[in-house]
Length: 272
Image 1 (spheres, rainbow, N blue to C red):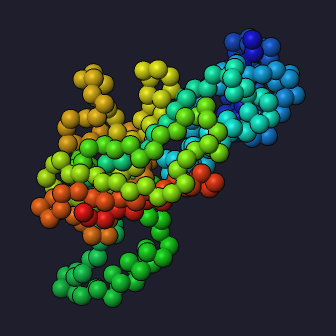
Image 2 (tube, rainbow, N blue to C red; image 1 turned 180 degrees about the vertical axis):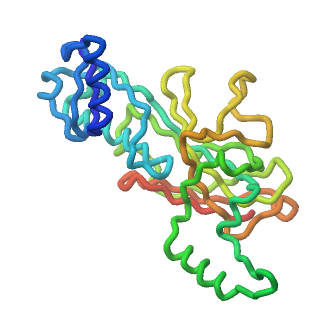
């Protein structure tokens, strides 16, 4: 059996080849293919069918967590080209889910809040210019490294969608908006909803690009209200235009949709 490493990044492929050379590993054992996986053809792999596909998945061009779902479309393309078999090839990871939690942030929410006055000066006109520019130009969900911004969990962690990588994107059924609620379980002021991806690499082994779970306690969700975040990934942050206090509302309403054609999501939240 041959291990094929497919990567179009010249720096990483150069490093892998140097490691192979240092360890006297020949191309008939590990073969490096410097090509975009979407452009892979059967001739690149000696017209064989791949037995196992393993990926992180991670793409350097990804900005928001769900952009790495490009892996799903890539697997589908490899099936279409005959490189991967729907029946014979094992795919790792084999599933993913998009997760969300409502939080109170210590400082992050301030980046979209009006200043009002500074040293006695009224800067409301400046606030209006900035806020209007944000609404016109900024995405509703932005990438932020949440480990840099302490926050408190106000709701349970909720799954917005689940994907099986063995199924084709064309079989995905989320074509309409999905409504739901994030019910507050802790006291506080809700400033944001944090979104991230979790991957099931194989049975019992999961990778979270957001909240780090207390696996030693055997919990699926952390019991503490202070969340610990994966510092090697950025999370998607939806900042509420108007903060919501649990005393005035018991939950957040949200509207969510995943556009399978573009790979982008639509997410909105408002007080219940």
